[in-house]
Image 1 (spheres, one colour):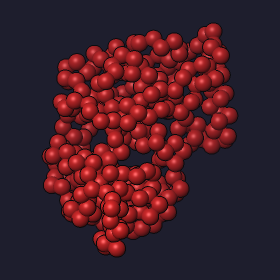
Image 2: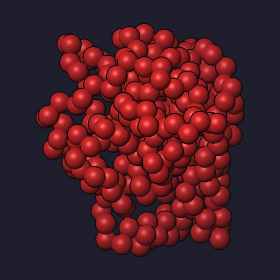
Image 3: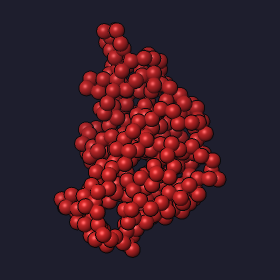
Length: 307
């Protein structure tokens, strides 16, 4: 049903979010974020279609639903000149979707470890005169046109108010892996190696998600490393440092993965190294067996071995 005013809608929404969380505070926070993400993406789809793709943690969340780790921000690829981006975001924030949410967007300082061309914004969402959510919006501005993408659907959190889920264009899964590999192997400011245990968690989650194409993955990896230009494309997946074990255990347990760090690295090796070192150039990733399979061949590529 449609609600007659913002106050009654907010009251009903808060009750449903609380009931849906079933006493789980983390789930309540997660679902509130998802409502805010959903409403922002609905506005962008209405005012700036064909100019952006969803990526990052929320894109993976939409694929995995409850199996994904919690994400606190929205990441987008954007095809637009920098000078026009903020105006476009203002237009989206001001667009009336008839859902009673009020959006505002402000530019934030570029974090030191962000890639060139990336911009950060703070999105504030209010409902019925009260703050509902705030979250970072990270946008990578790119010159190349949007060609291949997947269409994902947001969760049905507002169906009770006759607000439909949003159809969201998102980067292909092969490119999502490529960007995770890049972040995992990158050296950061001050010659620091990655401390992003979440990238290894996400690689393992993706390895179990759906079949992948070896040629598309190799192409995505080459394009990602060439575009970002921070370090050479590796031929192997380096082992994570031992100090990653405690944060990895916590993140892995939260999404139902085995918590052994070395085992997670083994999965990443099985998925990525045959593609990185050229042992396989075409084939399909088998999620159940966790190995690459070439068409018309009986041989499987399992980690560093050809069986």
